[in-house]
Image (cartoon, rainbow, N blue to C red; front, side):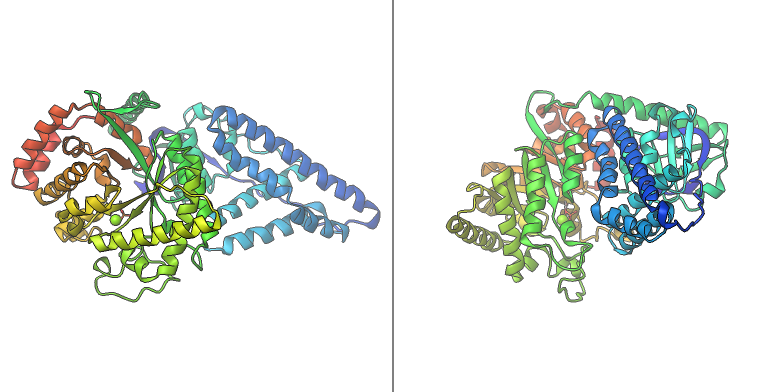
Length: 570
Ligand code: PEP
Ligand code: MG
C-alpha cells in the first residue's frame, strides 16, 4: 500500500497509464539578420495558436466542469499575453536567438522566480508557467500535444505532475483515478480533479517508476491510498466501497438547494468554515447557506509582514460579495496556541494554549486589532458581515472589543465611509469560563458560536493534538455535553442566535443533542454541508429530545458513545 495526499474523494479501480511529458528538444540556432522578422512572426503565430487552443479548452471546460475552474486555464492566456514577458522574448529574438530558446529562457526565469517564493499559491504559478512553456515549445516545434482525450475507459492516470492543460483534455467518463508524484491539497490538479469528481491521490513518491502501463491498481481518494496488484478480496472490498460511496453521493445530492429543516419542519442553517476568499467560492458551490467561521489568521500566514487594512478589506469584501448577502461570520485574528505567525512578536511560552493568544493578543496590540476591525467594518457595507471574537473568557473582553468597534464607527462616520450600523458582534464560546458565564455573556453579545475544538480541550484538560490524551479529547464526555447544553440554553434564553463552528457541528452522533438543546446553525467544512443537512432532516425535535435526555443521563463517555452509535441517522 502506497500513501499520498488525498485530494479528491472516491474509489478508483482500473488500469495504469503512465503519462510522460515528452522532452521537447530543439536546435539552439542563431538567426541571421535577414530572418529576424520571420522568426518574430513565427513566435507571434505560435502565441496566437496557443491562445486559440487554450480559449477552446476553457470553453469546453465551461460546458463540462464548473465554469470557475475554466478561469485557471483562461489565466494562461493572460500570462502568455503579458507585454513584459512578450517584450523580453522579442528582444532576444531581435538579438538573433531562435524563438524556442528565447521563450525557454524567459519562461524559465519566471518559473525560477515563482518557485523561490515560499507560498503555495505563488509556487502554483510556477507550475502554470512551466505548463505554458511546454505547450508553447510544442507548438513552435510542431509536436502534437498528448492526447488524453483518447484514453480508454477504466484508465488510472499516473504522472509526475498533472498540469492544468492536461486536466482539461481528460474525458471524465474514461478516467477512474489520478495519481501524481507532485502537488498538494490546493494545487490546480487537486482543484480540477475535485471539479471533475475523479478520485485522486497526489504526492506519491516515485509512483511513475513503481507502476507501469497496464498494471492493475486501486486508489482511495479519501484515505490517500494506492494499492497495486490487488487480490480478488481487495477488489471485492473496494468495489463495495465504491458502490457505497456513489450511492451516498447520489443520495446527498438530493439535498442540493434544499432548506435545512428538521423532520418536523424547524428551520436550521448549515454554514461553512473557510480560511481564504477562495474557499468562499467552494462554500457556495457546496451549497453552504453562509460562512459560520472565516479563520482570518490564514491571511496573516505565509507572508513577511501583516496584511494592510486595504489587503484585509479586499479579502473580507470579496467573501461578502461571493456570499451575495448571506451571513459571513468573520473571526478576528486567533493567533497563538498552535497558530504561530513568525513576524509577529510572540514570546516563547511554557503553555501556549493557556497563554497570550487570540483576543488577549489583539487587545494587547490595539493598532493591529483596530486595523482588522476597521477593515471588517468597511467590508460590512458589501454584505451581511458579523464579527466574532475568539477565546473569550470574561465579559470585560467583549466590552473592550465593542468599545473599539464603536470608536471605529464614529471615525468612519466622520470620514463618510459606509458600513453596516447594525453589525453583530459575538463571542466564540470555546473556554469553560465562557461556558460557565454564558448567561451573563449572552447579554453582552449579539450571537454565540461554539468552538468545540477548543472547548473540548480546555474542558477535559487534554491537548487537542496530543495522541496520548486523545481518549479524553471527545465530545461525548458528560462534562462537555453539559457545557454545550448550558451554552445553547443560555444563549437562547437571551434571544441571541447560537451556532457551532467546531468539528462537533457535523458529527451525526451529536446532531440530535444539538437540535434538542436548540442550536440554530451548524458550520462545517464545505464538503460536509449536504451530509449535515441530511442528518438534521432525519430528526423531529421530540425524538432528538428523547435521545438527549437518555445521553445526558449516562455517567461515562463509553456509555454515551455506545448509545449514540446505536441511534445515528444519516
Ligand atoms: C474551535 O476551537 O472549535 C474552532 C472552530 O476554532 P479553531 O479550530 O480554529 O481553534
Ligand atoms: Mg478555537
